[in-house]
Amino acid sequence: MAAIEALRHRLLALPGIDERPSRWGADPAFWIAGREFVHCHGDQAEVRVTRSLMTEALRDPRVVRRTRTSDWVQMPIAETELIARLAEGAVAANLVGRRAAPNASRIPPIVT
Image (cartoon, rainbow, N blue to C red; front, top):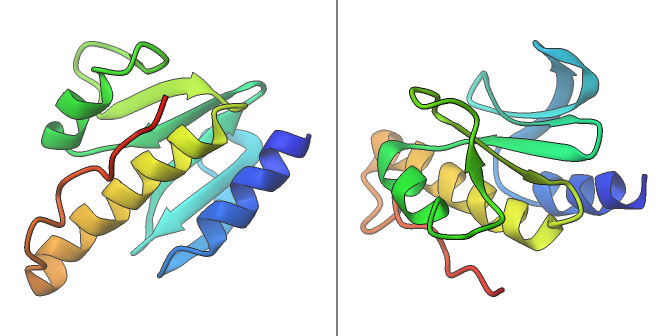
């Protein structure tokens, strides 16, 4: 449970994020602009990412794509820093369409 609390703390510090029930289960979910973009399933977390973020995220061996056509990636919930970095990239990508922030679709560096 400590990993979920650490993740909650990191994600709720990001702009425009709120916690609501998941559409896909009872575990915690985080939303931006009316869309669920992070949720947990037991000891796994899933983050919804853009196509360009997907390419970068899958370079990390801790990240797997949920299915071949999915825009969700999955990793152990204990990887709080990795999840937070992917979430930051997703938040930045969400802002691109709203105010055209330069380079906002790039994932912040992931330290392994």
